[in-house]
Amino acid sequence: MPRQWDKLIQWFRRSDTDPTPEVAVKRQQWVRDPDNRYNSYRSRLSEPPRIDPQTVIPPPKRAVHPDMVAASSSLGLTLHRHLARKAPEENLVVSPVSVNLALAMAVLGATGETREELTRVLGTERFPADELEGRYADLLQTLRSSAQEQELRIANSVWLNESCQLLPEYERSVTDCLNAKATSLPFSDAQSVQQINRWVEEQTNGKIGSILDSLSEQQLLILINCVYFKGLWDEPFEKERTKDRIFHGVARKRQRPFMHMRSGFDYLEDADGQAVCLKYGGFSSLQMWIFLPTRNMGLQRFLDNLKPSFWADVQRQYRHRPGTLALPRFKMECSNDLISGLQAAGIRRAFDQVRGEFAEMLAAPEPLYISAVKQKAYLEVTEEGTEAAAATYVEMMPTMAMRPERPPKPFEMIVDRPFFVAVGDKSSGLLLFTASVWEV
Image (cartoon, one colour):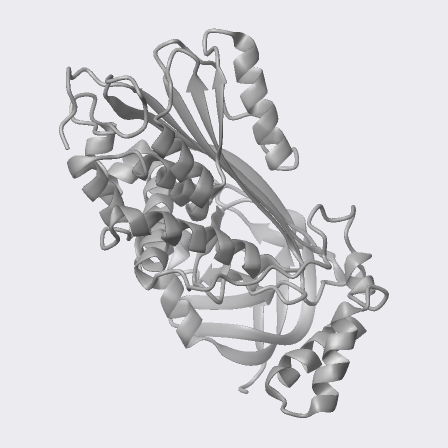
């Protein structure tokens, strides 16, 4: 059963449109009173959140454009499907939004056909340059406002070889719309690698210990995005009900701790499998969906059949139903080279040593191309909630060219075999993390 604070939240959600003055006054008094605001909820945190839970983050004045939402989900699912085929039957976690924001920093310095290709894949091709910055600012604000009582940190940075200088307009652009901080370092010094890795570790709360192994004088720019999320379930699993069950992995069966809950869920079922939604507490619109393919379908076929519209379709088709859920606790982390997946999604010129066009980043006339895109990601699910992190870096080097070109019955869902996970924002439709779980 939901705790008392959950019931209060549900009541206030229903009263948002209640015209009664008494209801409005009570609601305002309760929200403003620090002694009554989610004390039982906050006590479930293992440590105090770095984001003040009293601070209500307002939504952006303008919603994220649907083209950007659809493109972000499509790119994330394309990457997940591509990486799953490269390493079949291996645990995989990807952060679509982290890839999107890392590439956004590159888009702001791209020109010609390279820019056209990037904006087409990222869903921003319809926006002129002077509007693009505002659209990315909307995206950042939407993500931050989606978390509310949860902890969601998003950080961007530009690391510059001291032999180069950023164009003032590019530095202003990434700072104003993506809150990216630019830092100049001697890339030939091993201390620079440590400094960058420390920044990544701090931004991901220690979950991503490092993103770089080395730097060289040939590298001119490193663009990094970090995402860290810590969310508590709206209705936590009771630890006393966690029992060992058999999880049927790829190579073996083994006993693993399974969390159990009987409640009402947003739920979806068809001939291919089951899906259930777990919501995060407070006023957050973030949620996790767990997809369990049938034994005949299997996780690999499920991943092969993922469509760009998959995430949006799920949001439209679910129904609220009572049921029982048995879900294993799990933790996973992985590192992936993303260039081949991004090429499969339609980005090619940006990675071409001759045709890369990023003429609006550096003051020097030397043309650039993207030489590497890598991501490290982490995901853990427990009785209390979810902790996830990702760091994506885009490495840029000089090109070989002299000059650049331009109520139903209760269900039962026993997640005892490989399954798929997606963490996203219900309000905007943005995907934060996806995961294929083959072993727990």
